[in-house]
Length: 195
Picture (cartoon, rainbow, N blue to C red):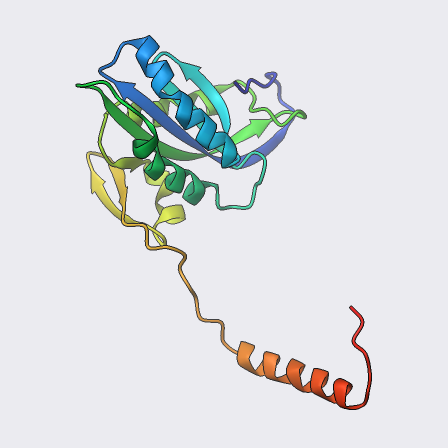
């Protein structure tokens, strides 16, 4: 689990918390059911922020802060239902919440009100036990291009992965044509391109 040293110095980073809760199962069974979630998330570059009782909270965007941590967390969460084997009567709740946390020099989130508020937010959503992935309102601008979002009871329901959204880049055809002409002239003159 990630636990940074409390203090005032550190780096503020935008990360995404992904809460996964097994509801309606004994704690020992819930912890065992969450093992595949932790393994899968680690392969996706996530770190375990906390693991208590029937909950696990994962942190995306620590190792690779590329700005895609929220969509990566959503993609991972959509796979969890396939990975987790639940006993009869139990259900899985998943939720995500983007947050700006303070990290210490060892790249661990510092304990403090920001971290506590983010943990409380994501776990309150995952404890609803909704079969769909839930997200806080703060995630809307980060998810709306890639996912279908609907509002329900003060949260966003994330469905319908649209895949990568392709945006048309204007003017690239001319640039590639010019580059091709330069390479053709160089080849005709017997020149060699070194790069």
